[in-house]
Image 1 (cartoon, rainbow, N blue to C red):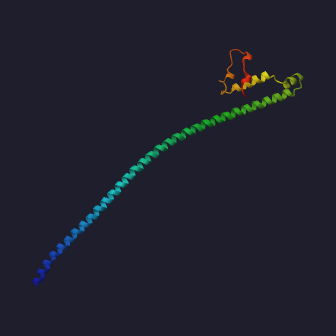
Image 2 (image 1 turned 45 degrees about the vertical axis):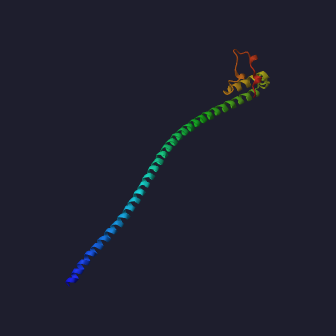
Amino acid sequence: MLTWIKTAVGNAHLTIIAVLILAIVALGVALKFSTDATALAQANYNTVVEGNKTLQGNVDKLKLTVKQQEQHKKLLQQRLDDYAKVTADYEQQATIQRTRAQQLLDTIEQLRNSQNEQTKTWATAVVPDVVKRLRQLAVYCANRDHRSTDACKYPQGTDTSTLRPTSVQL
């Protein structure tokens, strides 16, 4: 039995050594996989960090774009408000002008239908061509786009012979 114990003890050392060698090899393989996994995780982390930097840059650009668009929106709203005011003023003036024109038409009609013969004759009389041209010139020159034209530059005084109403293209 002593031989058996000696053999078993001798083999136990070999078994322990073999188990230790296998454990070291297994640890080496596990360490290699762990190192590879760590390297892969580090690479993934670096990729995520770069992606975050890119996304942050995009967010900053978008914030700037939104800020610029808000400023542009305010400017457009201001212009729209100004346009609405101008349009309202124009409509008000147009209404006043239409009312005034209707009043004048009513007055002309009253003059034409007057019971007084002298007024009736005056109201239906033909207006001389010179007066018509002078009136057309006044209307033409009332437009601010035409004020700088030669036809609208009046000389000193009121001599109507120097007016050139025939040069106005109406």
